[in-house]
Image 1 (tube, rainbow, N blue to C red):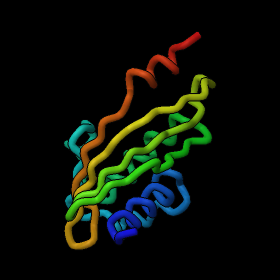
Image 2: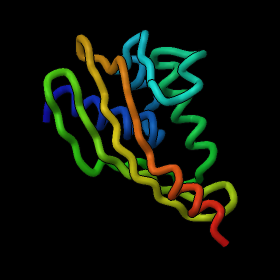
Image 3: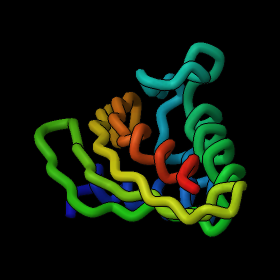
Image 4: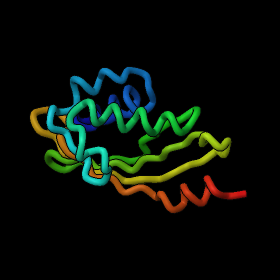
Length: 127
C-alpha cells in the first residue's frame, strides 16, 4: 500500500471513525479543500477535515466509514467507501460513495466526493 493510500486509511480510522482526530493535523495540508461541501467556503485545512467528520458523526450514532476499494494514479487516490450508522431518528442507514483525493508533499490537499444521498434520504424518511 502506498503512503498516500495509507494516509487515507489513517484519516478514515482516526478522523471519521473517531479513533484519533488529531492525525488530520499531520496528514491534511493547511489549504485542504473539498469541492462539494458549502462549509469549504468558510474553513480550510485540517480544521475543515475534522469539522466535516464531526458534523457527520453527530448525526449518526455508531457511525462508521469503511473503505471498500482504492485505485491510485500519480498523486491521486480514488476510494469507494460505505458509511453506516444509526440516524438521530433511530433508523439504521447505509450510504455508498466515491471520492477522489489529491496529495502534495505527502499531505491530502483536495477532495471531490459523490455520495448516494438520494438513497440515504429514502432510508431516513422510510416508514
